[in-house]
Structure formats: structure tokens, C-alpha cells
Image (tube, rainbow, N blue to C red; front, top):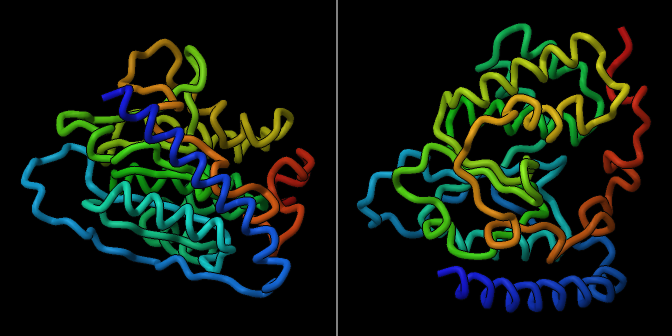
Amino acid sequence: MEINIIIFKALSRLFGNIVKTLSYPFHFIFPKKRFTIPKYSPAKITNNCRSYKIPKIIWQTNYTNKVTLPVYVNYLFNRLMSKDYDYYYADDNDRIALIKEFGTEREYNAFMKLTDGATQADFWRVFILRLKGGVYMDIDAQLVYSLNKLIKAEDSELFIQRRPNEYTNYFIATTPDHWLLEKTLTKIVSNIEQNYTKEGVWHLTGPGVLNAVIGDTPLNYRPSKTTCIQGTFTNEYFQYMDKKRSKWIHKSNDELLKKD
């Protein structure tokens, strides 16, 4: 199957780069044109009788579901690769409402201290997967093959690696109440309460926290190159066209938390 994935990935990257290139003149001509990602999209195929430990749900979040052309095409491509999965999207307000309803007071208070969209998304992905399970992907992530071929029915988790012993958090798939998510969320909340911003987003809420919790624990994982990649269809320009310079890389460490 890996050779099929490699071939399909190469073709999808070509398609994605064409979409990205053509989107520059498109949005030059239509600068205000936006496309709507639905808050909920049900599975298109429901006759898969195999029982999966990881719920067949995809979760994504961003500051708005009104998006540029390449972000929308990226969404459509991922839906094509996940036709037997339900899809849920959350914006800024949805994240707050969900954590307020289902989180502890301590978790909610910690989340409300976050000022940056990336740190909020880091928190929310761990929270929602702990609560509901399923698959989380960043808004610019692209599946390189059909999701039901990448996740096996017996899997309790699937993480991806970019390099040995370094896991990413832009794609995470787990069962609900997975021990790793519980420990990761606890550490994130503790980092926020202790104003641990000196090492930036990466170690406040991001992959640095996840990797610290994992340590040497063996996990089910795949390489990122044959599972899920980033930036094929879109980039910072298209993702933040309506909110320029709001990506986490433009924030200083002392701006990451609200002042007491």
C-alpha cells in the first residue's frame, strides 16, 4: 500500500500546488470572495460495518469558517479522503462554548487566559479528543490517502512523526479518554497557570508538551510523509488573509497569556 500512497501523494501535491498558484490571481480579482466550511458535514458513506475503536469523526478549528479558495479546496480534498467520517468545525466562539460546557472550572479558566489562536487550538484539540475521540487535523493539513486505510479498526491511537522520537500535533487520532490526552491537557493547564511562556507556544501548549508527556512511551504512529502533510494547498497568506500577521510566529512570548 505504501507505494500507492507515495504515488497518490505526489499527484495530490501537484494538484494542491496548482490550486495554490491559481488562487493568487483569483483573490486578486475577487479580494472579498470567501467560501464557507460547514460546521457539520455528515459521513457520505455509512455502510462500513467494521467497528473502529477510534470514532469516525474529524475535528478542525480556525478563527472563522469563511475561508479563501485554497483553504476551502483543502477542506474538500480531505472530505474526499474521509467519506465515511463525520466532520465538525469549531470557530473561536464554538471552542469557548464547548470548553465552558464540558470542561472543569480550572480548564475553562486556563483556556480563557490564552490570547493566541494557535495556543487556543492546541488546547482545544487535546480537549475535544479527550472528550469525544476521533481525528484532529490543522486547517492546512492534507491527508495523503484515504483515512480508513491509514487508521486500522483495532487502533487506539495514531500519531505522526516528522523525525525519530518527535511527534507532531497537527494530526492526532485517539479514542475518547485516552491517557495521553488526559496527561497532556493537565500539563497544558499547569503551564498556563504557571505563566510558562519563556519557551513560546511550542512548549506552552504545543508539540513540546505532547512530546514531554510521551517521553519514551511506545505509541502507534506513522511517518508524516505517508499520512498527513501541511501546506500543499494553502499557506499563511491565504489562511490569514482577513487577520494578517496573526499566526503564532508573529507573537512575542509575553503576549501569549492575558495579564492578571
